[in-house]
Image 1 (cartoon, rainbow, N blue to C red):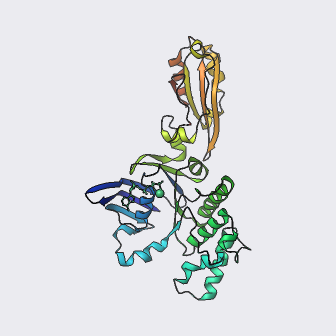
Image 2: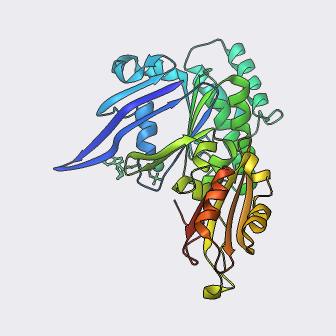
Image 3: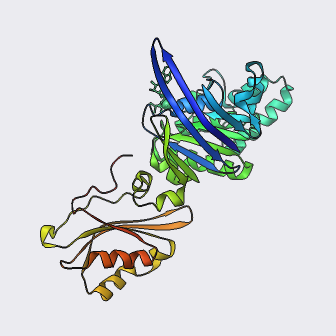
Length: 339
Ligand SMILES: Nc1ncnc2c1ncn2[C@@H]1O[C@H](COP(=O)(O)OP(=O)(O)OP(=O)(O)O)[C@@H](O)[C@H]1O
Ligand SMILES: [Mg+2]
C-alpha cells in the first residue's frame, strides 16, 4: 500500500522558486498498479525521488507499507527504502558483471552468505524468465532482457513496492509489451504495489488499474481506469479511447453530429438501431472504436444524424441506456489529440 498526502516539492534556484510538486495526493492499494502520466516537466521524476526520499519533499507525507517514510530520519532512510524496488528507463546495469552478478549486487551489500546470494539471484532470474542467461553480460542481451535483469535486481530485497520510472520508453513495441506483461504478472503473483511513471497511454491501458494525470505538479484527473474511461469529456478518456480521424461526408447537408460513449451493457445493446427506429432518422457512423479496458467493453462513436432529427430527444434516449452522448461541432477534433 502506498499513500501520499499533499506532497509538495519546491526547488530554489537563487531567488527563483520552482514548484515541482504542488499538493499531490494518491493512494495505491496492495496488488494494484497505478499509472502516473504527464508531459515532460510535469514533475514525474520528482515524485519518484520524493517517494523514495532520494529527494526530501518540502512538505506532505509518504507512507509505504505502513512506514511513514517522510518522517524517517536521514540515517535510517536507507534501511526503510529496502521496501521499495526501483526500475528505471535504462536498466543501468553494471557492464562488467553478468546478469547473475548484477542481480546479486544489492544482495552482496547486505552481507548475506555467498551461496544464499547465488541461489536467490538464480531464482530471481528464473522469475523474470531469464533462466539460462545467468552468465550473459549486458552487452549480450537485448534491451528487453536488460530491463528484465533490472526488474530482477529491483526485487532482490523482497520489496513490497515497485516504482517504475518510464520502464519501457527505451524499448521497441514488442519488448515494451513483454516487459509490461512481466510487471503485471509479478504484481499479481507477489502481491506488489506498483507505481508506473509514463508519458505513453498504451502503458496505462495495458497494465494499470488506476491512473493520475499529472500537470505542472498537480494531479488534474484521476481514478480507476474504467471510471476514467467512462467520462466522455475527460482528457484521460479521450486519450484512452481515441476515435480515428473523422470525415463528415454530408458536410452541411447532414444533420447534427454526436459523440457517443457506450460501456458494458450499453455497448452490447443495439442502441443505434433503436434510435433509428424510434426517431425515424438515418445514422451515419463517421468514426468508431471498440476497446476493452479492465473487464469492461467501451464503444466510442461519432455519428451524424439526418437533417431535422430531434437531437436533444435522441441524447435523452441514449442516456436512458447508460450511454454518454453529446452534440459536437461536425469538425470537432477526434480523440487523437495529445493529453
Ligand atoms: N534539482 C532540481 N532543481 C531545480 N529544478 C528542478 C530539479 N529537478 C526538477 N526540477 C524542475 O521541476 C520540474 C519537474 O521536473 P521533473 O524532472 O520531475 O519532470 P518530469 O515529469 O520527470 O519530466 P520528463 O518527462 O522530462 O522526465 C521541472 O520544471 C524541472 O525543471
Ligand atoms: Mg522524468
